[in-house]
Image (cartoon, rainbow, N blue to C red):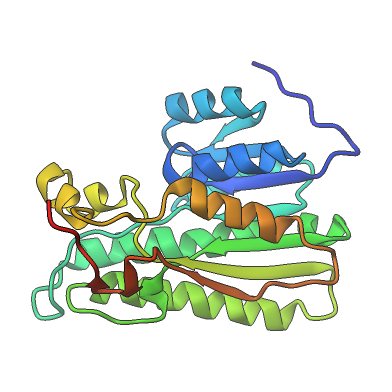
Length: 251
């Protein structure tokens, strides 16, 4: 399906947009008036989400230089970039760390964010009021047992985001880091490598955040006046006070 972007309508680019927070964010930004460009590896799901929100689906693997370059070449304008692609693999201790899992987490979360931001930064500046909104995690703020690889990756994403904010001072680009706690998506299923029982146990007895909650926050940040920069947001469910302190109700 062809999709024409209006010259007068702001454009939001969302990575990891085929499901979860990314898909919800694409819908939320479309609802407040953005033309949305959606990027992800799972093209069939991506195209379905794009059709729902009147957006444009472009295949994107944030770990691949050529894929990012091809994606960016098809984005004529970018007013908002939502760096959402990321994820965790495993819960091994440092002593038992799987280096392949760590490599994947670094490639997707850190270098993926870097590649896409770098590729679209000139277009964000040229927009005259660009925004980079990066979806981080409470894991970027608080180390916890079993989280070393993901903690390390998300701490790096946070550092990248904060340095970008410093480097863009004086340029017409705002930079925001949104760090959610527990969100009910397929995040845990990926982390536990497809073990549905382990993934379900994460949310048992808890009312976690939803993808739509985070998307609503992205939408709010994206619609602040140009002189307002929301630097950082930590958002948690009422049932969660820190990475591993969670209130669980009896079944």
